Length: 213
Image: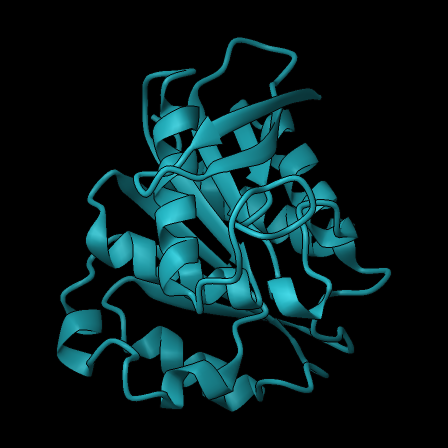
């Protein structure tokens, strides 16, 4: 694991860690963590599992802390500032290897990942893990027209016992995107406690199908 620091477009310095594959890298990925005000950081077990899985599949992976978290400068940005953070992370990791980029987000990070992907054509595929149903009810959430225009592959991965989203809501979200798909892990909770490797394998399979040359 390689610690690093990088700068956002609004002048903040963020901390992150780069995980490289043991073989020649074929693509890149970033991972956006859960809510900064609820203990979320790059060090959550589900993020560790996903970054290891993607690195095993040939991705150079950057996990990072949003603004105001641990060693990252700034303060909580309500999802807007964090989208700038994610874009800066994408800029940084794409400097490591040519090829496609996969953006993965967990819980709050899934909302940030979706915001970024809608704005940035460099995102080849999008993996949204533990998406929070309530986020889709906010006035600023992207319209159905905007979501239906997003034609790149998108995975919604959720636990059957996720207290923040029902399987029905997640499947409905996936249907709003032309190339969306939903996977529901039986008996799993919001952050896939003790199911991290299983969840990471689902993300890895998706990334290998759509995020590699």
